[in-house]
Amino acid sequence: MPNFESKLLLAAQKGNDYDVQELLKTESININYQTVVGWTPLLTASDYCHLTIVQLLLSQPDIQVNCQNKSGWSPLSIAAFRGQFEIAQLLVVQPNIQINIKDSAERTPLIHAAIHGHTEVVELLLKQPDIDINCQDNYHMTATDYATRYGYTNIVKLLSHANQN
Image 1: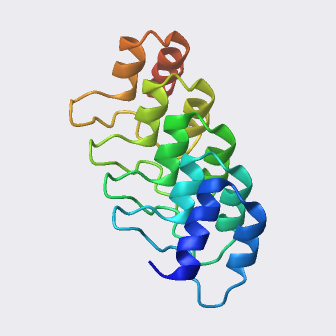
Image 2: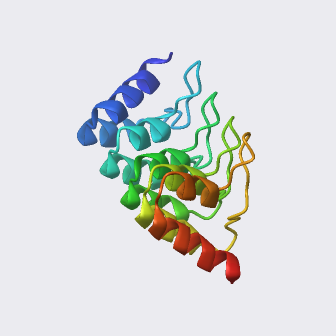
């Protein structure tokens, strides 16, 4: 792994805002560098819930907001899975965001948020114009199916209301 990219990835993982800022000034740095298993600085910062670093990376004109690791996880999928509302907020307003992006299990960010009971993230995703609430994963389950299975009645209500509109 190239030196600057490895430092950027490590700084994103550790939450070192200063190092990320300094490394982003490096002219030749590849901000979308992927490890062998597909992790990028943006994926890593999202996974470790480092909001400031996500903001710094999203301010870069060449950032790939829909990057996916080898398991198909995107920054938005990770934010939904972890219930990171503020990171999800930053991501959904990105011009090219794929709101219904699927991972290797065919799960969308909405399905991840519903599985883990993250009501606030579900509400945010439901406000997005292109959201598909009827997407099914590899198990033929939708966000509503999972919310029902795990007893997240508030999410079931939100999804049912959205499905009627």
